[in-house]
Image 1 (cartoon, rainbow, N blue to C red):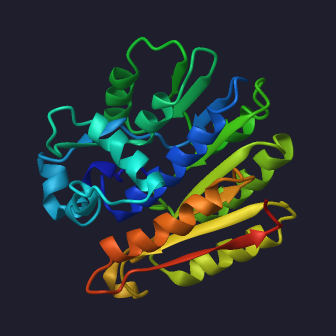
Image 2 (image 1 turned 45 degrees about the horizontal axis):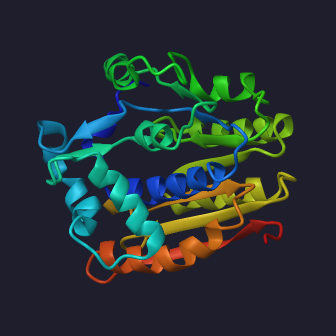
Length: 282
């Protein structure tokens, strides 16, 4: 259960998509003066070295953030995301990649709250060090799926929940759906973002079908692929499913996704999907 280490995959194409969407949602929440709540169910370590043995084993970041690092011609949403990654590398060299907690903390204001869940002992130690003494942030060593239900609805009545399991346990697909539907019933106005990997397309088809039939009224899907689906190749695409998406998100992704498919695709095989899974959006 605790064998997965994100340090091997930090900064890959899936991280680029996930953190781009996360950053744009948080930017939208921060536009209003009212406080917001954020929950990260599988927070990880907070940040990852790209010069150590883990990252260098497969160097996945080189075909992810590495292809964007020197670009100065990106659409506005991608340029803002890249600025955050550069902020995490003050030396000006790409030596580390931020985890989701960095993007989340970056948008926190005085009255906002962030809860970070992590079970892996080593990552938990690093996560606590990353948070330091920031009183706006609480680190919880507990199952993120459980916390997602238990903490809903937050007192702020506005906010974001990021559900980002490793899916190393196949039941994570079922638990993700159950958690989303249960949490949405408790926090109907909340924004929920679910990341998924495309390793076996049939699992994603089932996930989409289940959410499409869930009765949740407003769901958008954004998917980035770097090569055609093929079980023998591992993860060929990944996606973000967003419930109650900000009205600005679709427009930002309409310019960002084609750019990412072109920049990160392997041998011209980049592709993307973007559509309303349920409901109509402004």
